[in-house]
Image (cartoon, rainbow, N blue to C red; front, side, top):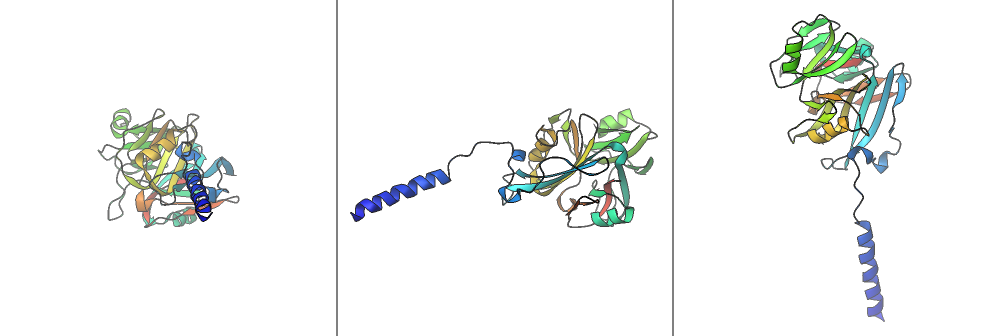
Length: 262
């Protein structure tokens, strides 16, 4: 009798184990919302006039808990401003400029000097860098992203360009992801949707370039026709404060230039 009950117990344990570790249906990374983050907003929410916010979790094999939180803001080009100056954290940039939101911008050197083109309110603050990067810019009220080479060939004058930041690599070109190196880091980016609206976003956790690019391109993700990667790693940070919403993702060090929403 003991042997009988022992055999039954073993069979039950095997069945339960098989049930627990059964194969799960495959889903796109940005569709896999972490159960512990059920309150995360999966849809765009208006947090200020012409400014929307979306926070959601994306599954990834690089995260210890299997998920990385994304904070994204969407607005129209005229609300964006590129700034350059003394190194400060995103929340300091936001408070000093009385902005609704601030996110880190492009690359900079060990001395805190921005690398690549910067244009702020029609004033060029830094020269174009001859590198295999891209340029996000606003010209005559419309946003665009071009490879450095294309941008240089098309615009020898910045007269009509109100804002610009050069960085890289480009993540999405005409709705398709680009070939990217298999590097892992916290991410920052800027993209343009098909209706001309601009999205800025950061990942509060590490992603591969491919995971990051796919998120920007997919219709269930950020759904952008063009997107540019900005400085990431320890520079990644965002500060948001409106009457309806506050959000802080801290970086590891202060930054010399930012993308702001006013």
